[in-house]
Amino acid sequence: MEKRGAAIRARLVDAALDHVWDHGYGTSTIAAIAEHAGIPRGSVFYHFPTKDDIVVAAIEAYVAQAHQRRLEKLMSGDGGGQKALDRFRSYFRGRLEARRASSFRRGCLLGNLAGEIGGQGFPRIAQAVRRGLQVFEKDMLAFLEASSKRGQLAKGTNLKPLAATIVNGWEGALLQMKLQQSPAPLSNFVASFDGVFTGAR
Image 1 (tube, rainbow, N blue to C red):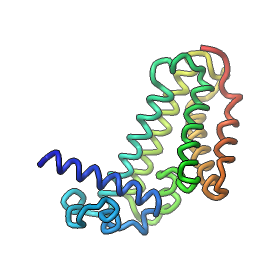
Image 2 (tube, one colour):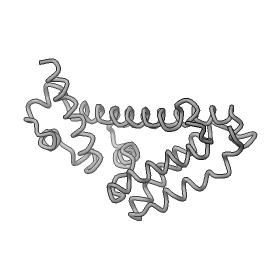
Image 3 (tube, rainbow, N blue to C red):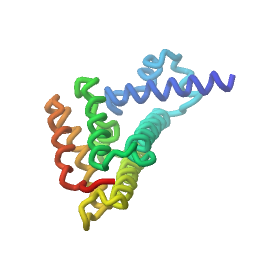
Image 4 (tube, one colour):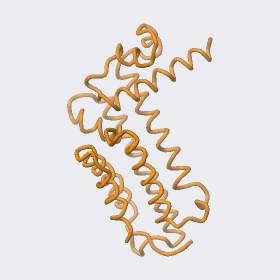
């Protein structure tokens, strides 16, 4: 019974993630998420008493997946001998290809929600989005620090502002991607950091 409950909860979180990512917070309802999951609406309330509960769980799942991906692609071991620039390019080009799979409709869930809710009075959602972006920034800072220790960043680079710039630049590029329905903004973003990385392992 416990395993079944965990499986139902996971299905609901996955369904909420997909639905909110595609349709936004405002038009996502408990009924729509339950239908998307193929689970009776009443079962949702057993696991998630409110809409915000399930949306926050979806955001946290999204952040955890992204964090794990960055650990594997940017920060695991020595990256198979790859230079920092190659790892940076590979990671973000991989994210570009993931967007291509959705015909450039899906940006970043966090960026989408930040743009939608703004200061409209959804504190739990806003807090979850802020936490997710902070995780992104911390991951990038850890990657930059490791790259700097290997001598693969330009001397004198201020790492913390650079990590923030990468996150902000990527989120902005994703918005342009959605607007233009084109990978060009993402490609330009990746290319703009070529001069930051230098040297060999």
